[in-house]
Length: 186
Image 1 (spheres, rainbow, N blue to C red):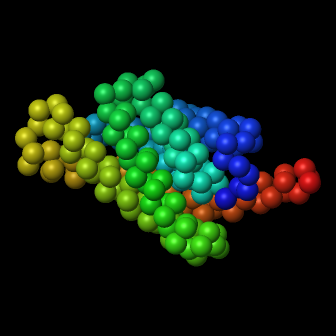
Image 2: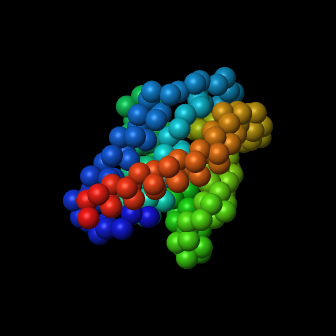
């Protein structure tokens, strides 16, 4: 985690930066996947939202993820279900923060890999539940919604696997960059 007051100008700037990166991580790199429920696609927004929580802490990281992912949904045709995306981000942020805290903020490779795998797995569960709610919102029967949502999970599984792989790689790369910047500044 970056060490500065969460209300400082630096924290606000970093939160804004992560928000923009999350939005762009979806907007620029988006591969649609056919599904029975919703319009899922492969993207790096979830990976970047988890990195935001790891670097900025729960409050600012979740805020960056909620604004980045939720803002994308609102501005790109997913406004009716953006609240579900925002709830998913908040839940994943809570779990990531809880795990980091339970590891006593020890960000060694093993712990970051565990966090990335847990976040990716949780995202599969939350996306499944979100798909059921989306299907119910358009009048689908519950049994049909459950089956159709399960059959619509391939994009989420791919996103979750990429999250489990990319979070540790990007975390240690960014950590090195942030440490170098902080050393030069001091």
